[in-house]
Amino acid sequence: MPHRPEAEPGRPPWQARILTLFPEMFPGPLGLSLVGQALAGGLWRLDTHQIRDFGIGRHRAVDDTPAGGGAGMVMRADVLAEAIDQARAAASSIAPPGAAPLPALYMTPRGQPLTQALARDLAAGPGVIILAGRFEGVDERVIEGRALMEVSIGDYVLSGGELAAMVLLDACVRLLPGVLGSQDSLTHESFETGLLEHPQYTRPREWEGRAIPDVLLSGDHAKIAAWREAMSLLVTGDRRPDLLRRNKTGR
Image 1: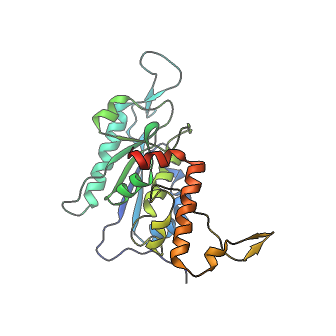
Image 2: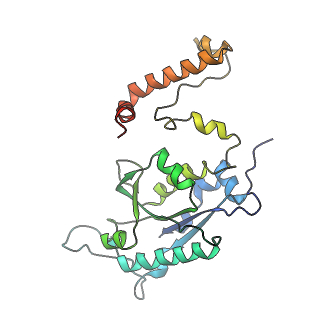
């Protein structure tokens, strides 16, 4: 029978609040598979806040020309601050007494990298508020004034922060208790030990002349564990030597 994630009675759901100009993009892929089932089961909740609701004037302007000149437009600090404040108030209104406030994140290529460790830290908290920016970015003063944590999902540029927000949410939600059928599977994934995951195999035993390594069929769990650790080191050294250096230096 498929695993159906459901919230425990009395356990508040992990909150995700997205500030966006395109709320219709959500839940998107977050409404599917185990993460979507966890959303339907109440393990987490997803709320969107339309930034344009806080826009200026008859046309609900949310951006203006960059100070000092340059191409494109920049999202206004006053508009975004009001949207963030409203999202924080909404989150607090449904949080249990004494709950910690939700951290506010801004998805941007210049942010700190999204890592498994960061996803685990965020998943252990009450949830997140995420600003999905557009245009050339946002006024620096709102980042400072509302203590936004800047987070990047990679060294490239997207049209907006919505897809990056989805990536971060998927990485966090799958770590919530009850979302995955077996929590043991989380401990053997890439980056959980600072290394990439070892190769995986399943039936058939031989396919197109390629056989499953004999050690995996030996039944000797100590040898299997040693093989997997050796392969993780080998794969990491070949594809991500920076991870090995980081493990040695702690940086």
